[in-house]
Image 1 (cartoon, rainbow, N blue to C red):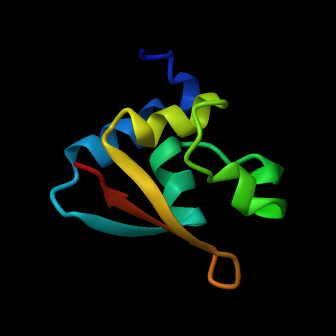
Image 2: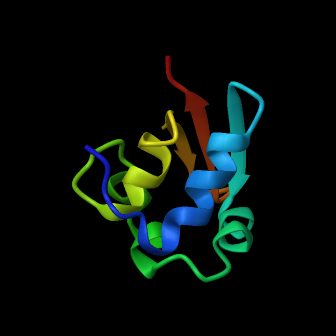
Length: 85
């Protein structure tokens, strides 16, 4: 079941078109891809925000593209995504 990706559609396309199996993106990189700022919760509560659950529209952007978050590094403000089979 696919959902509307709203303003996270650009992240979906970026990951779907990415050629590698793993990619680390800074929060700033993701904001450039999206063309807007991440919500405060992405920075303040990174573990639940970047969780691989289908309960939020933004998580569908990476899950439906065939990726999952592997880790979130708050000191360096990076998210590592890995391609899933």
